[in-house]
Image: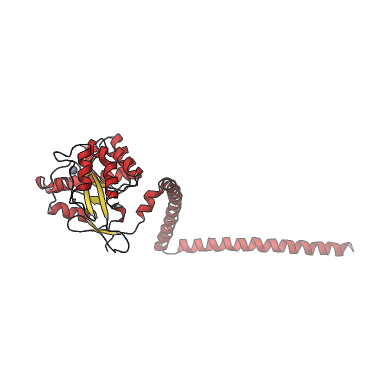
Length: 310
Ligand SMILES: [Zn+2]
């Protein structure tokens, strides 16, 4: 009897050992295979070894990129959070182009069924020079979009850069009005390039976005500047009318009246204003007056850009 029991125990033990042995063997096999493979690799030509080391490099760089991806994801998350606090800006950025500019700097609906013709574009030049932030807040409260054309000389310190950043975060596009507001026809081509590109760089540094709009100081455009602006993918514009820099209109009531009652007011007009005290004071009346006359403020984010055309 004992023999039988011993026999069975032995058999059980063998079966148990067998499966373990199999596992061990199969794992040994696979490790053997690995060793073999390694040996083969070692035996094989240098090229393949080099390939493998290339693969290793690829793997480790993939690991790095995975880590980077994680970091990027975190950054994206932060950016998303920022976007959420600023969803109106985001919505505007996603809008389809509805208006195109014509040869005299005013705007027409691309398709008249999609957008009303009775619009005007508000633009504020020469900032930030004391009034721009307050003007942006006023426009924001009135839900009136506008382009702020800035100069580099007005955003050299952190405080003014913060103002531009805030205006941008309110959803207003920041346009390039050249670095130091020089008449482009009076400076060399390399200076024109510097005037335009250095400000593009600064605006991008401050807002995170490259400008989409360009306006030359005094509306003086050279062929060289036009070409450069086009290469940079920006839409170049002058304006339809503006008065706040002219004698007789540097006062709140006068500028509020002429901006709304000028005979130049027409569908799609491009309105030039500046970072000035009197314009700031009149801004609410100007927007209300234009609305009373049946005009909506054109959203710059709905303007067809050179980069939209393929
Ligand atoms: Zn200007």
